Length: 397
Ligand code: PLP
Image: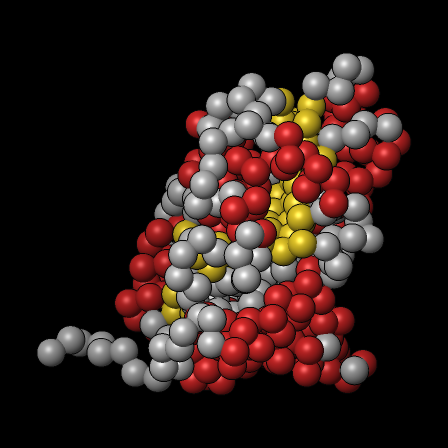
């Protein structure tokens, strides 16, 4: 027997995968069906149309069996040729990882360096683009929401830097932890490739990812020479599904149909507003804790706070993993850990997807107990600050 066998639901406060609503779980539990069966094709076509509405694009969408990394790789191999230059905007662990993948694939990767806690200075991006008078840079890679640091990168500013310098580079945006949680507009913002995944704002199991692709990006694809086969957009366009080389993961489409129904029933603007409200509750709580030299918000730029995940920086000499361990073992609350160089220094509270006030309050209360048990200095009563904010927000609604 275990002293504390977990009872009740696990409070899953990771920034991806996220909570899967019961109706999606039920939808995914679908019997096998031929992926060319007319009944499935109707579901499939409806899902692709719905995904385009969420991406706010009327251009191509290609889907992959594979997590977000698959869509990252698909974007790179379909657009570029060996030795092509990319410019990655530094945001944190995920901008580094995407850049490393591009190097592994034989691309030249430059970086616009940025402080992980403050975010990029757009003047530096403009300068890098302006300096490239020969237009060697083929694309700018931007992680819309850096899941490791809890910071948003305003993509409209990235677009503005490209426009202001008249630079023709493609704009590639990673929307993996923003799509369906934060406002994103592929066509309006001039994004050429939008990379997304199933397991975050879409509230689905992990295993499917996709790219929205602009007409300009399709033209670049036609000239690209990096080797590709399973991920080749040309190969995909030859198929009925215009995606997927091989068997289509049909169950995920029954889930996606339900996910799109849920998002559209609530209304995307209301979905974004709910994320903003719950994120602000988390931030007010953490700000309160930060008294008495307690943990603090990792992000130091209030205009770039992420509304889908908050990274909490531990006071010097205190281990974030101890807090996570106590939260999990004692209260069955699963928090995100620090990634890469932030390992042990931060823990992350995911607040995206299928989430409401009691879920976030339960998580915050449990974290506050874990801080006490771990002997981490903090100003107690952070949850009261969250309650006060949520009451104010509910009254105003
Ligand atoms: N990009 C971002 C912003 C992410 O948050 C993640 C995963 O957390 C990835 C890329 C990688 O996606 P995956 O883990 O699905 O391969």
